Image (cartoon, rainbow, N blue to C red; front, side, top):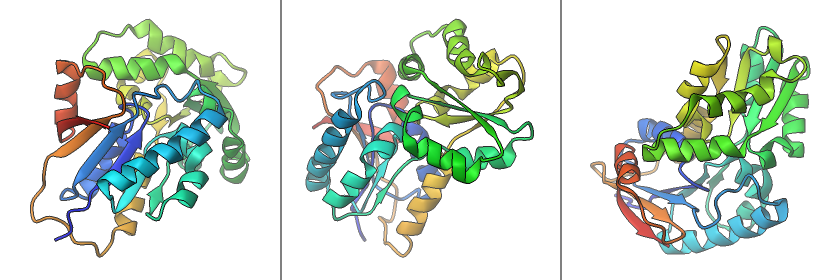
Length: 264
């Protein structure tokens, strides 16, 4: 029996959308979920800040929890800091990238949107993915810090207005070509948590695509042949700043199997 956990890392609660898929693929895997609330939000930070913070923080976490594999369940951290993390750590690391390839494969209008954080949508990595997998598509981009905050609030059980989701989606729809967009890449792991709210305010049916299933498949591949505990154990949520955890957030974390809470 190997009790080493999978460590899933995000700036906040967005990585829970990835955790849900990993739980389905590996139901016996011990889980340590880390929310870097001390550095939240990542999307408004500079590339230099993220490139310095994430490898150093994951180094501390790897030393403390000895994971068998790390999942960076954050598009912003992955597109900026993934090479630095892999260079610094002697443990397999799975990153998160915008799901532009599957979006292009499914779009019929050949206009797709990339809805992410401001830091993610401006990355050359998005240019490269668009060129490689969506060269025959018009790729619209919009960065929304507000939508990250809405997802965090929604998971805590706080009320969030429809108009705020409409504003985030309008950042794509109001661009030239937005009237023909049929597929939206949710290029922030927070956003699948509120995909149902985005669908409600959309002026027409839109297909929302994210990379969580692909991350789970990659995690399953990299851990093939590993041994696991005989039964599932409660997961642990780690926060990097000693903020109070509300009852609403505790309940939401428990619904994802994270019954223990600790601070780094």
